Length: 230
Image 1 (cartoon, rainbow, N blue to C red):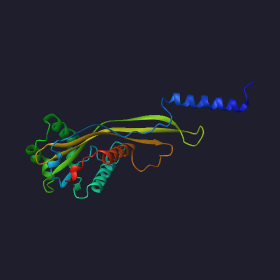
Image 2: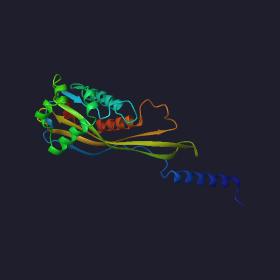
Image 3: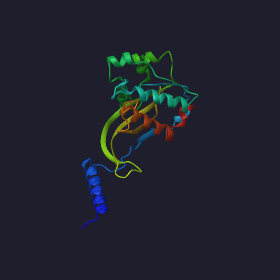
Image 4: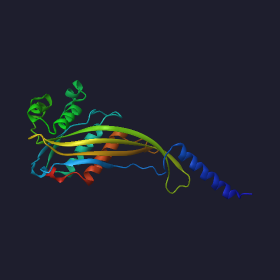
């Protein structure tokens, strides 16, 4: 006959194994922010950047598919990291209302030509909108994809106390483009992630915004080139 204490432990072990198996994940599921790929121009140091326009990723709204909060988080972090550079968010709502893919189309053009056509950009609606501020460069971003996955984690220091959690993951790319010669000064493709679960129901910001913000923090804290402040 199996002792009662051992029976309890056996049942607990079977239960934990069953729960983890059903949700198809490892315990202690955790987010992982990382850089997938990046490019820094060999001539990056020659650019004298004093004013930068930071474009919101489409859509720039406060829903769970928008990037309003992460865009503002990015500019706040940039201002803290590079106090000698002026950063601003251009008001392009009227333009993106007419063309919701304005920023993705702009990035596609940059990628296909390996640079921005400055003459064409300056004569465009968005270029004219920036004329008064006369920025030296712009930062534009694109969400490549986003996803969610669920899992079960064993809460630390509590025996068999399980918490159901979801991780929101966002793969995005940001570019720093010279508005003087159209060159790509740098681009970083980043994955940002955020854990949401039973103890996160009152979080202030949508999961996508928070995941992007975490990726931005990782980028600024680890790899963003310092030449932006020159």
